[in-house]
Amino acid sequence: MESFFTRFKNVLVLVAVLLAQTIGLAIQVRRPVESGAPDSHDVTLMRYWVVAGVTPFERFFHFIGFDTRNAWLNYVNLRHVRQQNHDLEQQIARLRLEQAAFAEDAIQGHRLQALLAFQQHYIASTVAAQVIGTSGTDLSHILYIDKGADFLLRPDMAVITPDGIVGKIRDVFPRTSQVLLISDTTSGAGVVLSSTRILAILHGSPNGQVQINNLTADSRIKPGETVLTSGGDQIFPRGLPVGTIESIAPDPDHQPYTAIHIKPAANLSQLEEVLVITGTQSTLPAVAQKDLAIGASTAEAQAAAAAAIKAKAAADAEAAAEASARSAADVMADRLPSLPAPPPTAPGTTSPPAAATPPIPHPLPTIHPDRYTPGGTPPAADMTPGAKSTYQAPAVSAPASPDNPPRDGQQKSRKAPQNSNSATPQD
Amino acid sequence: MLNRSYTSRRELEQHSFSPFVTLLVPLLAILLQAFIPKLIPRFAVLDLPLIVLLFFAVSRRSPIAGTLTGAVIGLLQDALTNQPIGVNGMAKSAIGYVAASIGLQVDVESPLTRILITFIFSLINSVLLFLIDHRLLGLPDYHLFWGHELIRAFANTVIAIPIFFLLDSTKRTE
Image 1 (cartoon, chains in turn cyan, purple):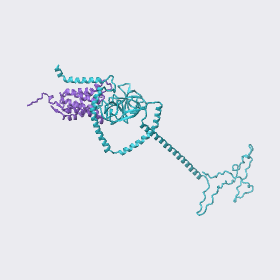
Image 2: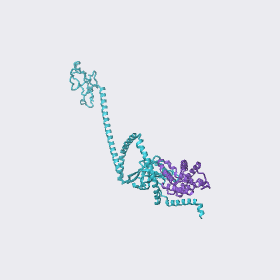
Image 3: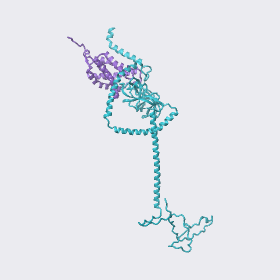
Image 4: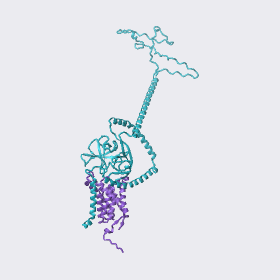
């Protein structure tokens, strides 16, 4: 017996070690396997000791690199900072205008949500944390951050960046937390496609991709569509960006479903800083309300400025029309006959006083009058309906003038027309 | 006068390491493996703890030592992941045992042997992880992508050769 153990001690040790670990696996793994299920106390304790031994070194290396990088960026490499500052100022100005454009819609949306008693969750508080390490293998998409229970972090808190969601807190240690990325196979998130409003569940794939595989083929789903959180998982608040659809293909493992691959909005492979959402609230946070008010006031100012510009443009257009009409009248006045301008007076002489009314011009006398000659038709009052016209036009003579004295039979001069056609246009 | 004779090649080339090196090198490998992918994401394809395990196993030529070294390194790796603890432990225990057993038979000082050992055991490690995850734990979504595993084996081999030469300086011949 002793020789048996001596002879096969190597194999026996191997079998004993493998058997012990197999039993350990059997204790840890529950049936059915629950994704992201919490570890048992013993496992958590073992992870705690390992993490407590490793993370101080990671923290040390991280801060050495962080300080070096900060020193380089803040004190040495300051090229293009002015240009970047200028660009950022322009970007802020542009974003303020965009914010003003959306402010009215947002206010209206909040009003409608209040009317419908719609329960909304807004991010109330976050904790900024720095990534200090990884799991070290591409089979487990885990990050370690430098904040833990000291900052009141708890499991299942959402982890995001300004670009999009990152994952959730899986395990919390006193000074460190373990973040499960959305690219891990055991992760999941409720999402909605932005344009089609189709609800889906997001998962990580074994090769580290993020995908949706619980939807059947739908012609409305197109690559490039934005994916947002739906809020249905009670972890991520509604409306956070997740990513965009990269490709759609049949899922060979889950027929008849499709594998919709998502390009994450956040760069999951190179994260430096993340935000842990530690609290949500049903009303808009005070800072956001202030921003919204600023946006609304900016929108009002924009509207007032636009109205002023419009009124000024209308006034200008009216003045221009009036000026053009006046110039047209001047052109007409130049073309129509009018009185000649008075001759210039010699210097030193006084000009005669202007006549009160200009002399009324008279038409030249008709040499051969006919019935069309003015005054050749009797007044309507003298005419009898149905009677034959026997009116004989009187002989028209030239008006009496010193050069042309009236002849006999022409003493009775014709009444000059009252409305002269030679009236000078006044305007 | 003490006359020491060697009766076999195994005793002639058996090496030992100081406790400091035995403890520090695997821990450093695990630490770097956890930290460097944060800076260089593609570094996650490597497996520094596996390389260190192979070096210690073939240098000590003791299957028991190889098994226990593999178990400890694998369990520490598992503790940093979200996988059940024991997946890497089992795979690396088996690899430590087999590598140490092979070290008894062949000349592991040759660079060509080291290249072959690293490449083949890297593939074996991937297969063992797949079997444990897919068969033992019953994870249906776990697949073995051969192209990716070949790239991983090649990368491990490339990085292993200088590491082996570096660690050769820590050997103590008995």
